Image (tube, rainbow, N blue to C red):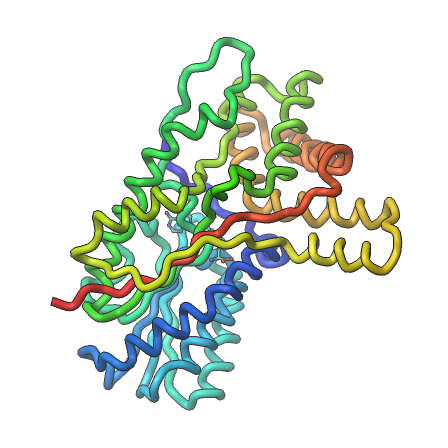
Length: 363
Ligand SMILES: C[S@@+](CC[C@H](N)C(=O)[O-])C[C@H]1O[C@@H](n2cnc3c(N)ncnc32)[C@H](O)[C@@H]1O
């Protein structure tokens, strides 16, 4: 089953991607090092201009700081081409609003001409012409698989455990990372660089954003019990994402050694700013119910930005009309908040994150 569900559009993702923003900030030093190293190589085309591709920009809200860092680290160039890619289903009108402001900022800061393009395509296919880019980056995207292999058959009326669902996803995750790196090796010039972040798996076994994943699942199960969501819709609701272990990523990278040199590879926890805010409030006074309600709201909105499109797709697959779907979605969101408040309000919202800086092999 092809995975073609975008983040929530209309600016909802921008307003609810605080964890991704924190992850992006930690990637900035890698991006700067990659640009300095690529600039020093004086690659062909580079005296005229510098071409950068962002693979998986979503709304473009988390693209601004990386592009400012890139332009600040770049030696002077006549012009820069900034290319923003995401799936065709992505809300590119929101991207356009963000990146035209960015263009003005960069041109006033650097004095260089800055040209913008948007490419609606899967990054599991070609995105730009061969050997046409100097630098590429992709932040918090590669956990999204190209397709979700059908989960193993479940006996009637049973939900599949998360662990079982993950088996076919693991194989797909290896295929996808290999495919992505092969495609980017044709697009990025030898000597150019690629910076990637995606969700990883902690060695301790602690799952990522466990409070949200569990609350979404519990709310869905409750709605099935109440007869508001069919079992078929509930079992077809799964988000085709997979968090790779450091070893799995390393093993794919080892196979890609003739195309990419690994300059940096590490895993780090990234915490949602709302968890930090709760810790700050707790250090000043005892927490009240309204603090927890606020935390549950932020956490669930964050989860909704990623998962709502998938739940909607599952309901639509059940043949429900859009009004009915909207009513169910609203109740599901409320129930998810209640589940979070009941069982996870003290839990950190955090995610192990893999950081990679790769250099394209020069022959
Ligand atoms: C969690 S968001 C991250 C967005 C942004 N880079 C950030 O850091 O906030 C993941 C993005 O990857 C995009 N994405 C997932 N699979 C994709 C694919 N095959 N091709 C292009 N974009 C994809 C999604 O549409 C979504 O916008």
